[in-house]
Length: 340
Image (cartoon, rainbow, N blue to C red; front, side):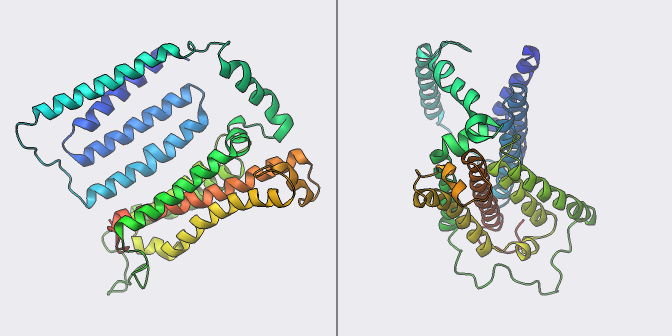
C-alpha cells in the first residue's frame, strides 16, 4: 500500500463526512455523502478488499445516493432552523459521542496488534480458509466460499433481513395492496413529455449492458469479485435508471411491484430451499456436497460450487427486487405513480 495515497483518501473522506453533516442543503449533503462512499470504495480497493469495494460502489455511491435524493424530493431540501437555546443539547451529544469514542478506543488495547501473525485469526481461521477453499469447494474466490458456504447461515439470514426491509418500507408507506394497478395510464397516452431525449437514448444503450454485466457478476462471483448481492444491486439499479430516465410507470411495465415482491420472496425461497434439499438428501442444512446425488456428472466438491451458485442466484433475486421496491415507494411516496 502507498501510505501517501491512503492518507489523501482518508483526509478527503473526513472532509466529506464533516461536510455532509454540516451542510444545510440536504441535496448537496446527499451528493457529498455519495462522494464519501466513492472515496471509501477507492480505499477498500487499494487495501485489496475488492469485494467490499464492489459492494460500496454499487450500494453506497450508487443506489443509496438515489434513495437519499428521492427522500429529499418528497420532504424538504433545506434543514429547518432550530430554536435557540439548544447549546446544552449539543454539548450533551458531543460529550456522549466523545465518551463512547474513548470507551471504544480503550477496548482496542485488548486486540492483537496490526497484522500480528500470532493472532487467533491468523493462526487458526485464515490459514484454514486459504488452504482448504479450493480443495473443499473448487471455488477460487475465498470471499464467496466463506459467505456462501462456510458461513452460509449468516448470509441466508442477511438475505432475509433485506427481504424484511422491503416489507417494512411497504408497511410504513402503507399503500401496497390498496392499488388496483401498479401504475395509471397517462390521460394523454404519453408517459413522459418533460425528460431529455438524450438521457433516454443513453438509458436505452446502457441498460442492456448493465443487466448483462449484473448477470455476469452473479454467475461468476465465485470465481472473481462479485456475487449475488453486488449483481442484484446492479440489476436493480438498471430498472431504477429506467424509472429516472423515463418515468416510474414505464419501469413498472417491465417489472411490476407485485412481480418484484414475487422475486423477493422467491430469492429467499431458493436459498432456504437448497438447504432443505440438502436435509432431504441426508446431509446438514446448506451442506451442498450431498447435492452430487441429484446433479449429474458432479462430484461432492463440484456440488458445493454449484450449490453456492444457486444460493447466489437467490440472493440476487431478493436484492434486485427489494432495491426496486424501496425506490418505487420512496420516489412516489407510496403511491406508485409518476415518481420523481
